[in-house]
Amino acid sequence: MISLWRKLLVLVWCLPLAGCYLLQAAQGQLSLAAKRQPIATVIANPQTKPTLRTRLEYVQAARSFASSQLGLPDNASYTSYVDLQRRYVLWNVFATPEFSVEPTQWCFPIAGCVVYRGYFNERAAERFALQLRANGHDAAVSGVPAYSTLGHFADPVMSSMLEWSDAQVAATLFHELAHQVLYVKDDSAFNEAFATAVEATAIERWLTAQHQLEQLQRWRIQRQRSVEFSALLLATRDQLRELYASPVPRAEMRDRKQQLFGELKFKYLLLKQSWNGYSGYDTWFKRRLSNADFIAIATYQSCVPAFERLLHSVDDDLPRFYAAVRELARQNKLTRQQLCGP
Image 1 (tube, helix red, strand yellow):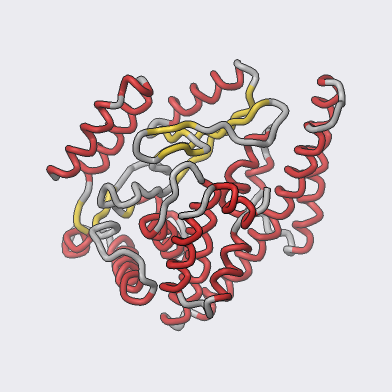
Image 2 (tube, helix red, strand yellow; image 1 turned 30 degrees about the vertical axis):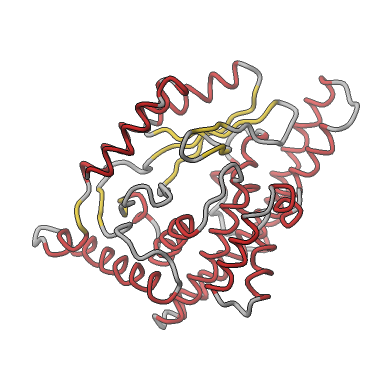
């Protein structure tokens, strides 16, 4: 607990650098720490609902597997539980200029420069997004069920994570622990793609080891849909980048921009037909789209194939993969970008 307070005091000390934003971050982290309970204690409590007990026992098993079989950190992270009593732990704000798909970045003392600002209060996130839009930017707000403090704190399992299937809970745990293996300041795309690649192979191994072959098949189908959805969005993002680089007058560019968003929605309807009508992404499209809506997909997905190729090149051996990625992390950002593409 002393270490926790020291780290939070660093945040408070840095307040002049970022105003009230870091204060709400520190307060949010303190609130989580205050609500944290050891998972073993929650399981042993006779008043714990059987469904929650079963989910947390599943988390314990996946956490043990992560350390013993995947080479992920063996520490206090994800050995405690927080009942948030809300759907998300925080809300991320993404932004771009009106005529650019390149994300706005914000820089902080511990995390470095990242492509989002996270708020523990949804209203605060929406207010900041509104401010960005008033200044001519595109902005989007996205709820986040889990995040990593990169090993600076003992991250808890949160009730927001348990809204999903067992497989998704385990995948999220593997993803967030991967951030503790490696994190490169000022390179969100590299960090997220690495963690996503670890997540993908980890969940395959976990479900296979658990003999949950039906869940594994459902996971593979869902992941293929995710890949196809991401490819659709990234293709539109490339079209927008080309449009913004053209000498088209701003008014015409604005019209063409909205036309591309309309075409994207139509292409999604065609894609759904190949999924037998699966509607899991419908909510994503039921709003006015902007450049900022592409940031999360581009950050998490655009470099994943390169990491998966690297993993296969070392015979899918995770320790060797981690070593190879650490070597890449020591290179300059341009070299890493050449691995991932634009």
